[in-house]
Image 1 (cartoon, helix red, strand yellow):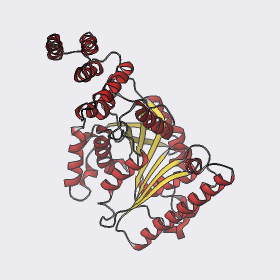
Image 2: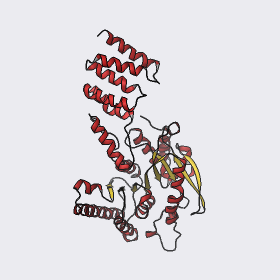
Image 3: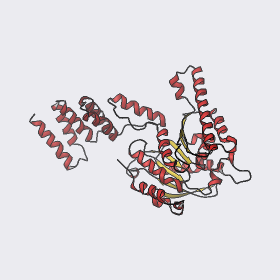
Image 4: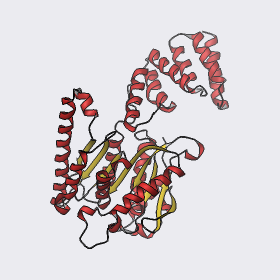
Length: 402
């Protein structure tokens, strides 16, 4: 499976560097990330972004969801390493990752509900910068899809929840790790509760995590969880009163959420495991489950994740063959395997692999005429190596005597 070596190196440097010495280095030198600057009229300054493109971006024409990361200079390395690991194994889609480097962290990321009186606060400018400058620039510069996720830890997690409150339309998923929601007499929790009543459109997806933090921080997250539970019950009740089924009522929620407690991890050590679980929660069951044995099951899975992100997701060849067809073949369910190989051959007519697999499955079923035809079609496909072509010709020769 794919994995980006630079991301591992960046993560190791992050883990082994004592204190915050990473701040003295250029994160872009440690990661497959490009440093760019864009001018902001809201801040009247240049803002630095760190942009990491998925493997194969430069050689294809696919579009990708976007993950935006706060506190990028310090926290992009572990987030990007997690993305590369999970996406490389099919648990997430490949993502364009855009890190926003702090200019003035407290000024830019402190939600106004809890900002100290008399201090400079530009949270509103951060929201405007995202809406009118940064996100449009990302969409113009790269091949993006409409699905976006926002990630933040600590103060960045609080800003993530503030944006969910005031500008939920900017993102589809929100990952907030270790936010201090008790500050300002739980003002942010109250603001979130009020915002749910005015929700429109597809539900946002939210993941919130808290570790072994100080008691008030834990109580803030627990209060948010109680609000989310109440909102879930209220939304289902309203939908049922309108004649919806229970399944429909659950699908019409303002927000799909998960709150996780990492009781053995502190404010810093929670970052990696919570990012891992949070991204899996946002992209819920993205990878095709094992033991799928029919075309209907495969198509149902891709319809579900297409509905989740709001645009069509199609099966890719490696998923169909590696997770469905060949497991069926090695389980000696050759008739089912042949069905999936035929399906893949129609979806990917320029590839020899589905036809080759079909030939092997039909050979096991004793359907030698059809098996020979599948091998012959595979041999005619472009891109075969000499070894692959020779292997299939030998299979044909072996069948000639049967």
